[in-house]
Amino acid sequence: MTAEEHAQIRQNLLRRKSELWQEISKDLEDDAREEYQELVQSIRDGSDRAQAELEETTIISHVKSKVQEIDRIEEVLTRMDAGKYCSCRNCGGWIRPDRLMVVPCAVRCRTCQEKQEKSGRI
Image 1 (cartoon, rainbow, N blue to C red):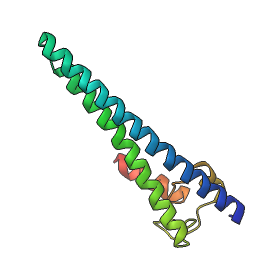
Image 2: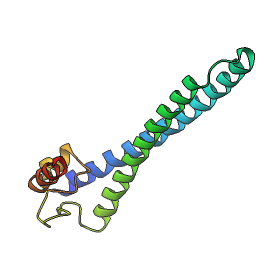
Image 3: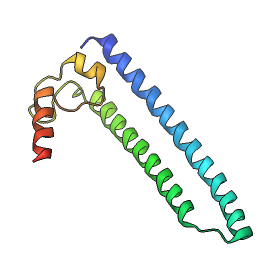
Image 4: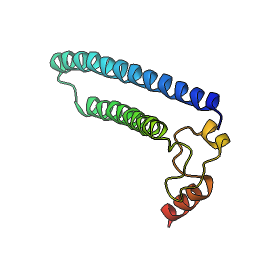
């Protein structure tokens, strides 16, 4: 992998991390606003909280998946700093640069990833 490709991937990861934090902030802000409106409405008409709880669970799920993606990005940035970005976590071999350009958070070479996915299905 060239230094330019490495720098481009790093820049893309940092940009994505920033976008995710902005999305999380907006999600939580929107949820807080909706929660307040639902509370006022439920006081007015004694409406069922089940729908509100379902919506809250959905918001939490969305935020959780975004936090997990941020964690994966942080792991990649740490691997980059340690000089281990292009090496497979399982076999120690090289992860092809074209794979990393498409899947920048990849921690396994294609062969080890396929083995991992097959063993997960069994």
